[in-house]
Length: 394
Image (cartoon, rainbow, N blue to C red; front, side, top):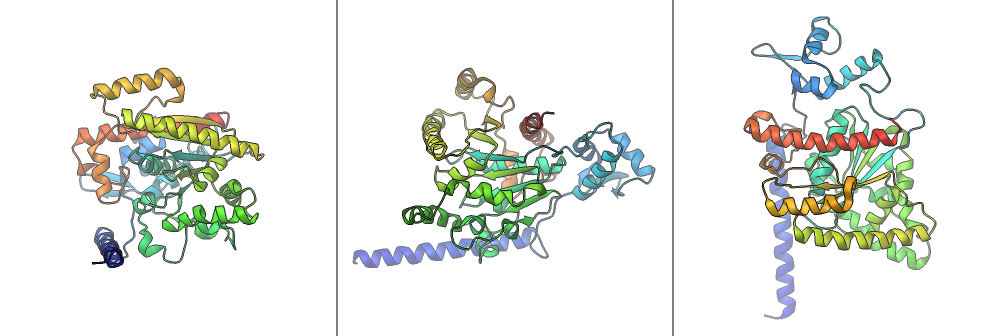
C-alpha cells in the first residue's frame, strides 16, 4: 500500500468517526432535552431561591401569602419551587423597596465600566471552561447581566449551554463573524439568549481558528490595523447591555487570546496544583508578559483592574497538592483567590449530561457530595463578584 493510499484511508476514517460522533451527540441532546432539543433551567427550592436573593425563606413565604411577586409552583408536601425567571422578578420587586441601590440588582450604576473577565491558561485540564461556565451562570443567577463568550474553538462551554456546534452553527454565529477582517457583522447578530435570565451567549466552534490563520495574512498586507483591539471594539457595541462579560479563552497564546487579553478588565488564571501544571504555568506567564509588552509598545493600555489565580480540581487531603498550594500562596499572596475550586465527582457527573452543577437537581447526588461541591463553587464565584464590586468602588 502506498503512502498516498494510507493517507486517504486515514482521512476517510477520521471523517467517518467525526460524523458518527456528531450524530450521536445530537441524538443524545434530543433525548435529554425533548421535544425541541433545547435546554431549560431547573426549578429552585424556596431555600435556594432565598439564598440567591439574600433573604430569609420565611420572608419569601410572606411575599407569596401577601400575593406579591410571582406565584411559586407548589409541590407535594406544600413545598414551594421558583423558576429562574421567578427569582429575577422577585429581584426587581425587592429592589424597589431596598435600603440602598444594588441590594438585589448588583450590576452597574452610572459611572461603572463594563467588567470583562478573561479566563485563561494554555494547558488543558486546568478547569478553565468549568470555571468560566459556572462563573457566568452564578453571576446571572445573582442578578448581574452577563454575556458569556466561548472563544475556545473546542467549544466546550458552548456545548454546556445546549448548543451543538456541528449542527447549530453551520453558517457561522461565533465571535469570529464580528471580528473578522472582511465584512464583519455587528456583534449583536451572534449573541444568543440562553435558558437562564440575564445570561446571553456567543458560542464557539472551529471557525474561530480562521482568526488565527487570517491575522498573519492581514498583517503581511498591512490591513490588520491594531488586531488586538478587535474583541474590545466589538464588545463596545453592546457595552450598555451588560454588567459582566466572561470570556473562555483558547488554551494557547494566539491572536484570539491576545485580543481577549487586550479587552479584559480582569484576568483569571486557572491553576491545577500539580507540579507539571505549575511548571507549564511558569512558561505561560513568561510568554504572556512578553506578548503584553509587544501590545503595549503598539500603544495599547494593558493595565487591568485585577488579576487572580484560581486553584482548580483541588483535593484538600492530597499532601503534595497542599505543598504546592502553600508554595503558590507564599509567592503570590492575595493574588491567589482564598476559595479554591474543589475536585468533585458531582461536577464531572453533571458534565456527562452537558450540565453545570447549578443546573442539575440536588437529588441526583448524595447530600454531602453535592453540598461540598456547590459550596466550593459559590465561594469562588462570590469572591470574584466581590472583586467586581470593589472595582466599581463598592
